[in-house]
Length: 143
Image (cartoon, rainbow, N blue to C red; front, side):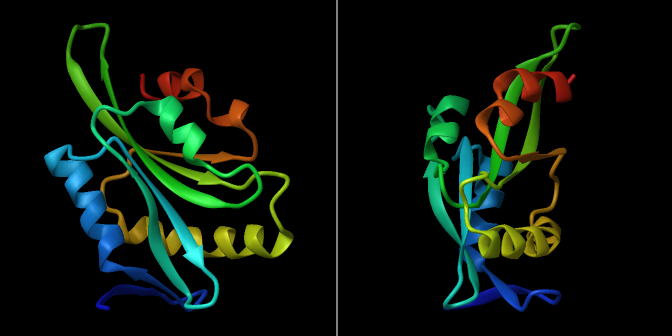
């Protein structure tokens, strides 16, 4: 398996699949969202789930586990008050209160490395429960 980048601070590796899926979402609009997970044994950041272009934000929220951490990117399309179509990419660091302390620390220390690989993120959210990453929060940030 080819590796794209090593995250120096945690010794984690980001797979090529992570970056390639992200680029497909960003440029080709093949995906609405991507969920990433860290495999603690292999020390790899991998793609956990990919949402097709017809899926929505509720599908992303449902794809995040209630008791484990994940990263996610979401391509949010909207129309401005000037009637202009825009698209913003959100990076979500999901760390629910029910997750293990070890997982929370691992995801918190690995976040910056993954963000460097995913070029073009517009906004970042840190969420511990669904209310912190609701659609109202996304819309408010994208203004």
